[in-house]
Amino acid sequence: MIAEETIAGFLDRLASGRATPGGGAAAALQAAQAAALLSMAANFTTGPRFAEHERAARRLAEKARDLIPQALALADDDEQAFDRVAEAYKLPQESEVERSARGGAVQDALREAVRPPKKLIFLTKTILSIGEELAGFANPDVRSDIAAALEAARSAAAGARATLAADRTGITDGGIAETLQGPASDAAEVIEACGKLSEELRRQIREG
Image 1: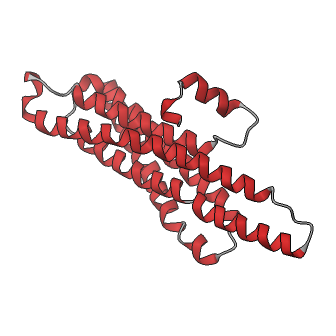
Image 2 (image 1 turned 90 degrees about the horizontal axis):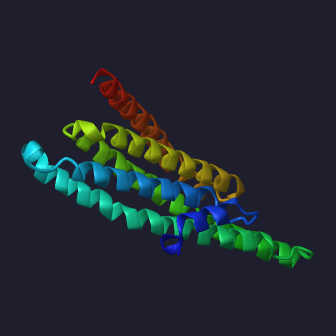
Image 3 (image 1 turned 120 degrees about the vertical axis):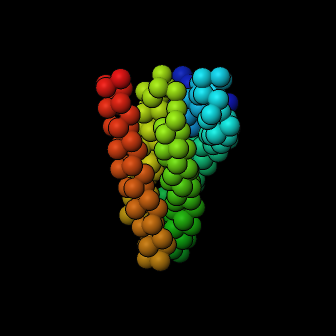
């Protein structure tokens, strides 16, 4: 499990010549980091100085922290799903029967492979909503951390969208391919909104 690896160990596998882990798993780790940063920022918005917002801050800290294992699980899911895709493409295709079996196996694997990035995009929407709420009252000292979280979430959404686009090219079922348009549009919205809020936070930092 990726959650049990060292950072160096995961990055070593990511840098290797193996097909997995790849962009989808890396995007999920970006989401996990985004959630962790938001939980940290919320925890720094507690105590007497922020008594008015402490309950909300603690709620957001817990909500963000709960997303970390979800994101890590999606990293594992993505790696395992693409392993199945890679194995399906290796099936023999000498005869018509083999080609038909291989084609069916590839399509089955691709149908499963789109699930993790679709779920990851939904998760980044939740991360964005936490960031938007927290940014409204957070400790000014952690504005940069919230901005960094938003940039990580932005990267996660972009990575998931790229993974979906790659999977879609191999899917022959038009109905399934059609279902990917909604998540791709959601990802675009997350990317744009994260960028705008991050920019606003940087403006606030500059202006003190």
